[in-house]
Image (cartoon, rainbow, N blue to C red):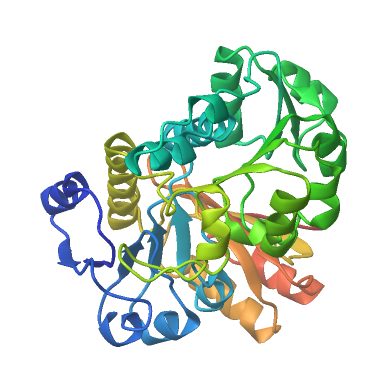
Length: 397
């Protein structure tokens, strides 16, 4: 199997794949624009921040698997991948601790204005009076938008600072919030209103784009802290810049809308960066996180290499369009399944899902098919007359 690695990743992953015996093409400097011309005969593509466009997916004639060496998949055209039957998978949870550490670091840095104080000292200005005005975090309420693995890690760290923690998430309800030790908020606006600081930990998706808008920021307390280490597109940056000026929000950002790709590039959003505490999307960039991602990528590639299916594909249909089921117990002989499929083809019935389970001894099997229409009575009778078929059961879903 040929694997193209199109980002800088841990040597640990390369060593694991080399031990597996796959053919690796390590090209960490490839850009999104270069990928379509370089995908070649690769069956698997591993990326971290490099975007994978529909053009790249269509150019990869042998491409079967795309691995995002990180949590999100917003940089991959999953619609194009799904239309070509290409698995897309990622490494959730591997960078949770790293991102949570940076979020807490930005929180403290905003409260104590560490960056501004450091800049003044480097410029020869001792301003102890100015920077001795921090409110402190103990007993304050941290509101977390998104109670996934990273949000929960941030909550645990915040409780270590003796902060109260509230949360909102689409999947969160009062019972689960209580189980996680979180104060439940029914809406993002409720969270904004009750929090002294807000930290964003949502995945990029159509429903989260611009979720932190002007109304949300206006609902925050004057002088509150706002942290975003998730995705820049979740925040209305014009509204954020205005809130910094008008409501004196203290802001820590690791992500920006339309940020550069790659490790070195020009950055144009300097006006916003000058008014906040900011880092260049380094939330997941620790050695510990890199090693954890490397291990997970190696496990994914190994599973795909050995079974043809990766763990945790994110672009599988949650519920197939099948309307009927057909269960056939049969002798495990050559041609049985082919005969079943030929009969369904003649009836112009599509198989949406299929599983054939072999019983101990390999003498018999049970084939379950989910179909987009019901087989005719004549077809069922034909199957029942087959001496290699033991039982036929059909029904609707």
